[in-house]
Length: 102
Length: 104
Length: 115
Image (tube, rainbow over all chains, first blue to last red; front, side, top):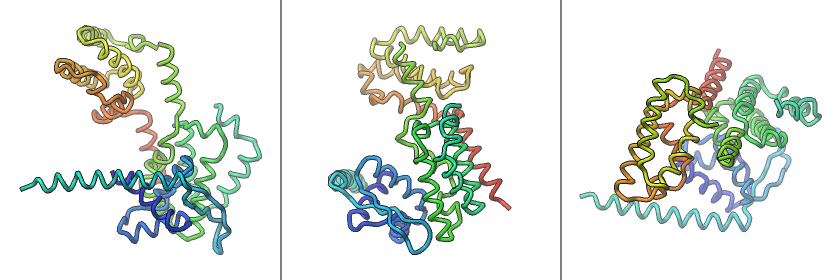
């Protein structure tokens, strides 16, 4: 379940500002997803790019190799809306189930 | 093996391996094991060029430049990382399976 | 490749014949699904198929039950036969080549990185 949620999180982070893998990973770590590593985010980014939900640009970095930056596109924004709609549905159902507990 | 024939000896492949050799030792070890695994599993992307593999080198170069330990980049379960990477890809086994179904 | 061709021992032949008789009693859509499941499950097996026997038995049992309840096969399996097979084969802990390679990959890395 976490995998699907993470994809939404990564796309959400990208939608706010053009960014790159390392930064996204640190942001997720700071959010409390402490076992998310670069590799996890990388596989998600590869998929987002393959599904044409993001645009990429290579930019030189002051340290190490050039970095690949990701920016959301229109298809990505639509997908993000779908993801959050789905999430709202799932979480409302889970809450409903929890409240049935007496 | 077909993939090897296609990529071995080609300039692109040599350039790719040169980048691998420039990685720190621990990254090289993990990279080589990943490559071996991917060739066995056989996602179709492997025969379409070095994109899948060079993407991993991109990731590793960045991690190495940041001074990270390799398993902190891939996660402890490297196989899970690989599987996630080729989750949507067809493998040769899948293609064979489809062929069998069509033949029926 | 037909699964009969892959079978070695005669003890297994008997078991497969028993399976086949049970399959014949299923409705047509179930029989068609069974054919597909068969092919798919072999992908998760060694070549003798011995480790598949309990899985075949379990899956047939499930098909018989749901057919008896009058459900369609699509309702019963969710339409994704390949996914279904992956899940059952995984549940039974059938070691596949892919699993072996996976373990090899992680073990090699642990060994070579470990000081």
